[in-house]
Image (cartoon, rainbow, N blue to C red; front, side):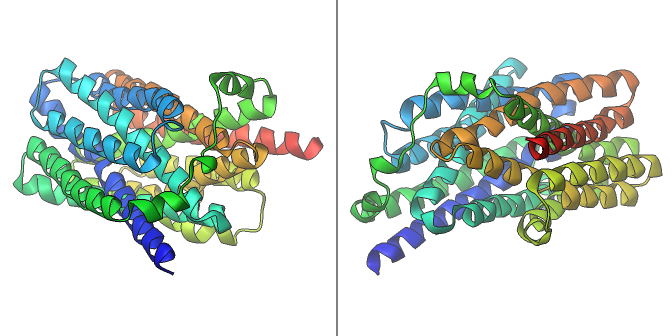
Length: 393
């Protein structure tokens, strides 16, 4: 009974850090306008901030592959959280733009490491129903994403963007102190639940072999374009409402609306739709492309906010469903199955923020944001092709 109680306490800490991480990830989308004004940069350059974050996230693959099997996950989690907080603090000092980009790369490395480890730890501690617990974990992250824009907007009303980043860094330091004290006190009980035998290992050759099958490529491309949709909206929709629609009050609400839809989609809608995962993804992303286009054409803050909510509701379940599908294809190497969709997300997040920023600079922010709708349509097409291919096999 005590062992179960200790494990539950640690799980609660994991859920809490995922919630905090979800909030912190919304800082760039919410604070992008004051950052642009402070550094006097264009939107294409501002998009590099997200790209460097994603490049750092991609580098986390090597960190996890090298260290996850050699260092206890709880220690690696604590070290990653500490370095994540330090990286946030570096951003809060408003360094030269080149150093700022490097700092965003660092939060990408350590944030993605934390993100990956939380999924693995939950699978270790709750092996009875992994799919539901992982969905719950992603749902809590979504709640953080929902609260993040409004929280950042409230803070930025009384603090500068650098002070907001310092506050986030301080929150993670306080969390880390609590985490370290709990783990130190319950080390023996927790290590008995998270033995080395539960760690799945794979090599870089497995990653290369993943792309040898067409269905893997189609799955990878589907999540690549879905991430392009979500990343472009997450970075630019608040600025679109502020600059293009001249309605600053609605900016944070438009971003939060997308995350509200994502949370509902993951926790309530997806489990209650009786259809294959790929059919859900295809139809959902098609709906997202349509409603986002309608929202952009409406030319109103209320219209784009409603469209953001609809996009989240229709396609917010895409990532959990694709990760689950990939794990089903690799039951003996679920770590590989969950990692490969994230590589698509990382690459997509490097490509689309500066691309959409460049389009916004040259042709206007409306067309820059319209890239989200194009990406949603592409995700629908490739997931539909995959669904048809699997049915014919």
